[in-house]
Image 1: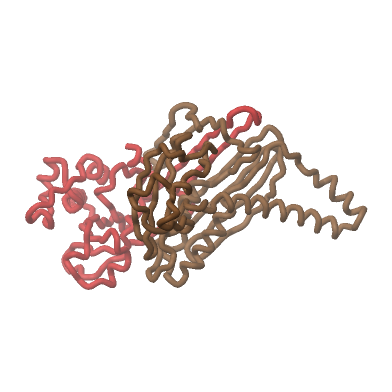
Image 2 (image 1 turned 180 degrees about the vertical axis):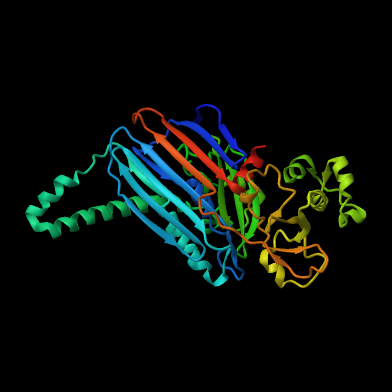
Length: 274
Length: 175
């Protein structure tokens, strides 16, 4: 659970029209299995995908928009990370990113600008691919306690054994694998879980019931989120021409809200029996 | 003057009868300290004109953007009124209904309506309201995590800096 560490401070320079908000928090559960994700949440917020992706109309984009986010983490000791920088650019957005490390300080820099106020209907599919690509670099997984690889010592050793070319290839190969693993793990964390969105909605049949789909572990407290005691709220809606039902309830372990999507209509009386 | 009309005249419309389309006289708006977009815009224009500044109300559509020009002429084409003012040869688009807007006139963001019909003698064409991109970020977030020990809670400091229209929006949300 995140705890506020003092009141929010606001500085408002009305002459220059600059408003600064400072917040401080303590996060006891920052590490999960000695790992943590650093996520550029403000940028992700701006890169949300439309509910309907197959469109005959253009997709509106907030323009102009220019947003930056920097994430710094000061660690007790250096850990290995893959430094990188690049640009993801499409029809309507440009995301620049740079990951760097200086001793035990890791710094992730992001800047998002929008380039136009809409995406033509025929280019929306490509735009969504660009968003996917952008989202894959908007977070970073770090692992505590891992030792920093001393490239300075490794390179001469490899050079003696197999020559300088092999050394460079080996170093680049390791860095590539490390980077790809970190990105893939982050992408995996962004992928909607089964039932967490209309795209991954559970199919229901009359005989099958649905309550067993609610009984998986809570992603926050990791205890069973539904054991038959929570109040279930249903809401039907039509998405992309199909009928869905979203079932809302509070986790019986920690009280946090959950939405579970079903492809079809969940009858009111069925609930609760599963 | 802009700040006065934005902050001291409550944005409130009682759009009954003819005043659903006809603005109230500026003196009445000033006296009762509330008005809708056309009331506030006319009051601002009147005050600016009295100060020797050229200013006209301008009709806009808050949803259509530049596609407004593709629509058929209609009294229902517009849903909002702003002000087009000219000062020292430069045109400014002012929205008298924006609360908590701050900063110098030179840094004032243009309303994002893109097209406007300026209400003045002989005006028959839509005028472009340019959308200006900011060279520097208008929202900057800095998250600083401090891990003194892996056994202790992590301290997170978040510093969010808003500029230009984002500062106005953030100020309004917090007010």
